[in-house]
Length: 384
View (cartoon, rainbow, N blue to C red):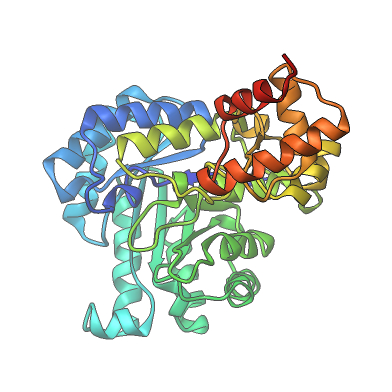
């Protein structure tokens, strides 16, 4: 039987930290409503203490969205937690996400304190948040570089204090997949009360490994993954929702599933890209313009014979209308013949060979040959 992986979407919090991509409250509500339609389990709606606008956004999203858990971020500070609780007052199901640094780098250079004091503050913050809401998530910031023994102690302490979810973030995108997976495995093997909380993962993409690290963490028992649409976020971004969801969808042998309606992935990607003014790179997995496009003659030939030759997903499954055969100088006769037939033209082999020679001349000049170009070529080849 499949096991459920919770999808925690932080597009409106961590994703919105990207310079130049800030949204108004009204825009955030539109995105949140789309995330609800997509089927995410948790929406991290903002960091209420950071600004009046963020506070208002969490309030209004809590009113507008009813199915997902609405989560508000805070530091391990009573004022932050108070603001988060106040902003969540209208949420059908609210969660406070509080936490503190766990690596020696953060403990020494960010907080100028000791491991012992960090645990004290973590316990106090968790208990204080627990007095505000039942559902408390604790983040061990920079866990990717934290000492394993101390990290396990911290996790055990906050679960004991009432945390329902514990987040093990690779905040700086430092870890390699095996390393991160082993970190999650160690926590499961060395935290006595681990069964009382869900372990969550939040990976950044500084080395391009966010999705790989997230899959490694899920494989070792984490059952919540923190993601953003299109992988947007601080610096090089976060784990991409679409990549994790479709990796689990394609690799059914893992026995894991999400509640995401994958057919809304591409429309959601387009909405976020437009509203946050962040174009999606053409070769972006799942949602990029070229994700289901074929331009190499060898690939086009194989794809036209059977899509399974070069596609491991059906484009319709993620909300893309169809695969695309892009005609360039690298395209072969099979692709040219296929496109001409779609346009209503049919040629025998000698005529097609001649047309293909002229097609390559056009392709070398234009780089990409469109349907209007093909119609012009085809009409000149038809005997009068």
